[in-house]
Amino acid sequence: MIDATMTQRMEEATRLTRAGKLHEAMAILQGAMPSGKCRKRGEDVPVKSYSAGNTFEGTCQVMDEESPASRPASAESASHRADESSAEAAASSAFEYNRQATSGKISGGDIALPSAWRDKWRQLRDSMAQPEQTRGTNEAVQPGAFTAGCFTNHSGTRDYKLYLPSGYHGQALPLVVMLHGCTQNPDDFAAGTSMNRLAEEQQFCVLYPAQPMTANSSKCWNWFKAEDQQRERGEPSILAGMTRRVIDTYELDASRVYVAGLSAGGAMATTLAMTYPDLYAAVGVHSGLPHGVAQSLPDALGAMQGGTGPLASSARVSSWESRVPAVVFHGDRDTTVHPSNADRVIAQYAASREAGDSANGREGSVGKTVERGQVPNGYAYTRTSHQNANGRTHLEQWVIHGAGHAWSGGDARGSYTDPKGPDAAKEMLRFFHSHANSAYQAGRIAP
Image (cartoon, rainbow, N blue to C red; front, side):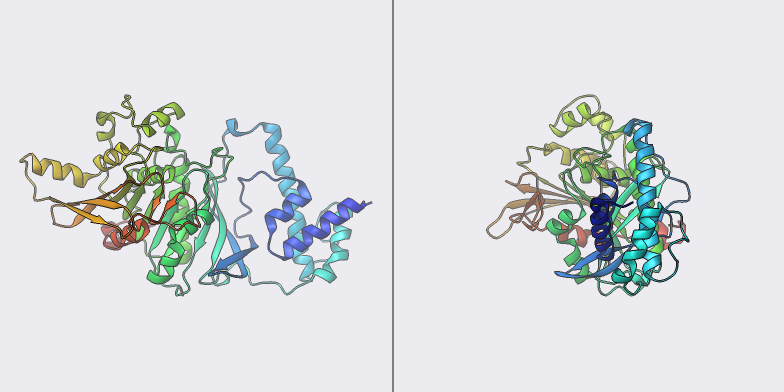
């Protein structure tokens, strides 16, 4: 028998399902559902997509690697995992049944469900039936859409949002990967940086990976953990795998893939530049930290405060190096991540070392230029550009005088933004578009 409470929950869950609000519907059916698992490969669920204030239906396509997801044993107890698995399986079956039943593909006895649920879904299907959307194809993701997805590989699972500009029709566009800061999410970060609007203007795609609270209670990327600082392991593996899969799925230009981030996202962005220089053609680091200067939370706090411990020492920093072109922004009044970290980030990139060698009289034809400017009614700034041996700007450092821990030139609709600074998003894109991955262009690397 189904009591009144269950009937109400199922009716509301059905309404939410048809409206594309899958997560809310699952929560009603099964209680609060822990995040961290994707559905099976190739299975789509409807989601709402937003563009320029308009709402329309899109699809959410799950992308994963061949190997199954694995979750650290320390993250949850065995009983918690079992409860989550059984709850998600039941809800998934219910939604799949509802989807097929409302399209007339199956009858009430064709799928194994609790009899009460099965009968109730069958009773509701006629009144709730709607034409089935196109599913399982890239064409279902409309250009101009900001859609949700999920990626899984051997290191774990992360949700993401993807923006495809309205001018995308299958051509090989560039891709910019944006890593949010602590407490933020893809929607917040997109609003604060205005990167989707710029994608419309300049025609590129934007990928926003999302860090869940199950991975970090403050939704910070775990840049300070040793297991998340290595190629093909931890979060770098997930982020690089997600990037590759989006490139492959939408046939984007693999030679023009860029990554940028704010704060903890900036720290993880430079980690990706260190561990995947073959994938990312350039990196933008805003108010971030260098790679490998911490291997624990106390280390991280010390580095953020400008500490001089063994991991934050210049010797430790100099042990890492990347030749990926980099643009670095930092406010000189930042009390969250000490401004000295910008210099440490710069020290890990090859162009600054070559410039130093040239200044010391060693061989090389690199140069350095320093420009100072002022944003009208805003902050003054200093931009230092390093040219490589070919005379090309390979590294830029922006110091925003008077700015704190916030995205420079950002939109106040997003958190941690300061509109009085130079527009970091526009300047990063200018820098990115002047660089491409020569290895991809030469056909030596496959995405």
